[in-house]
Amino acid sequence: MPQQSLYERLGGINAIAMVVDRFSDQIVANPKLNVNTKLKDWNTKGQLEGLKFMRTLWICQATGGPFQYTGKDMHVYVVSNFRTFRPFC
Image (cartoon, rainbow, N blue to C red; front, side, top):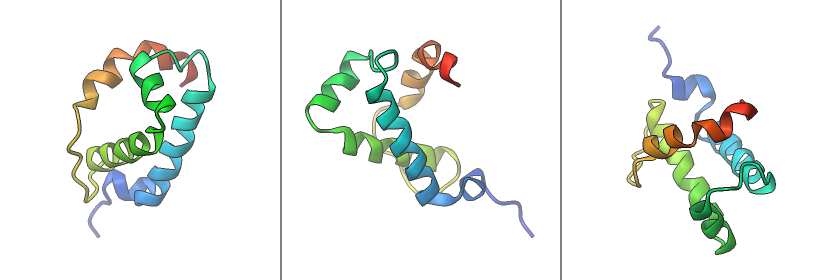
């Protein structure tokens, strides 16, 4: 039996989407995490649902899922903001 991809081991699209949904809501609710002005702008304009969708696609693609993320390079964002999230990991 072939080894499952990380995407499959994580539970697929539904499990990843649920984690992204909760993670995104927690960022907005936590003043220590909600410091990125570009993200605040997205949140105040009602674009959080679209951001959640794009985060979900990005994680699905990065873990070997059958989806194609076509947005901005999020590796730069994740690496540059690691210090912000590190205390919460």
